[in-house]
Length: 362
Ligand code: A2P
Image (cartoon, rainbow, N blue to C red; front, side, top):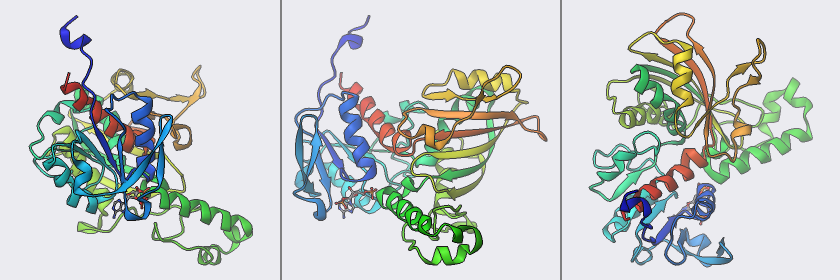
């Protein structure tokens, strides 16, 4: 056993920016449960609205502070999950104060001097961070990458056609609240859902999403951007290329919002440099870290098994099922990947990046 196997990592001072939010809540829980060695109490930061309130931490609670330059004094790791504007403004401030910034927003992801890291896929990228910032990928991209990487390693990925089914929780706490409030209102007059959907829709307000999400499916996630694709769709394209180090990867994305509280699903058709057999794909997927294969058709001795967002909510792992050779192209494989967007899709990966940084200090 080497010295580094036995060395205890030095404890780190940690700040969470956005500690009161949906991802911030999971960050607090995970830092505690995974026993990240934290020196003293973590610093919880949020907006002026929350300043002075208290959040639980282990057997006590810690006061929330408004974000400020002084709040980063002495901090080793600052995890940001308070929106891109805060990350753009305060990320460099925290880095200049000596912290490694782990940023959950899209603000820094495509910066050439900021690594974009999925802990199971490209952990080595964390080491080169000239800005002192490490970016956490978009939740949909993250979930897809955990399944795509082992297949790419085995077969050489060239093309991806991906359709996402994204949960309300991807838009934060306000997205979840909006979905639940709409559902409650609709259920007061459920017959409209069958006979007069437009009247039902007129009774609810839609702010987090562009139309009513409850009992609906929205072919619109994020804001429209270049070539009539949304920014969510462009994130899937650009971030996948960066994480897999495949700048020429051909991608066709469609991001769809579904009335699920937590858990993003992606149906993907992956094309490789060589013909692909299901058995070889299953072998690569079964050996992949952080991934569970749930794939059975309920006959010929197989149990019925496939992943769902509901069953993945609150789980750390990414799940993959419906693994099928493509009917038209021997070089392509179809599969369905699901992961908790607040956990592996956000907070868990951020904490796993923090663990990689802590490990550097042993
Ligand atoms: P606050 O609770 O004080 O508004 P979510 O993604 O669940 O919507 O959470 C967003 C997080 O970002 C919350 O912790 C929120 O704090 C924080 N936040 C939002 N606006 C600001 C701001 N202007 N300065 C600091 N934190 C902010």
